[in-house]
Length: 137
Image (cartoon, rainbow, N blue to C red; front, top):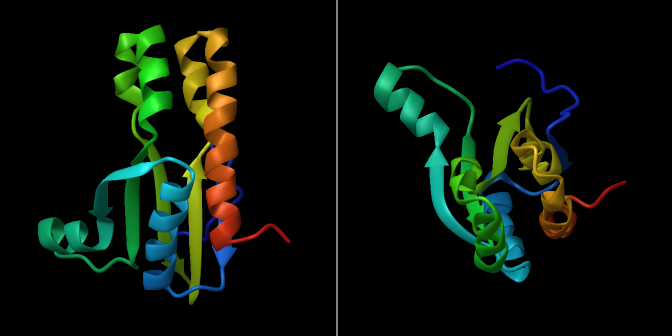
């Protein structure tokens, strides 16, 4: 896997937690911010199963805050194409990283400027969840 670089479409941070602790804490932190985890995709397991290749531990959690999702879908029913909000936990060079999508960047593709406030709310909540697992220095 390539070395992670600065991410312009999400907030990715290193944590001192173990991989398993980080996954559990992410789920707890998301719940605190009103998100449920709709799905957990184990990329490592899928790549091993489908391609027979080794890959570092990497999971994608599909997070959804029902009231915010409802507001977004009421403004644009096709917005389901961009849901849920992805949160990642992965290992790289003996380090565990956690990250969340930048909802403002993601929703900018809709050309609906009125969604900026909603995106800001999502980013604030996801940021607070990440702060629990990997506080900013």
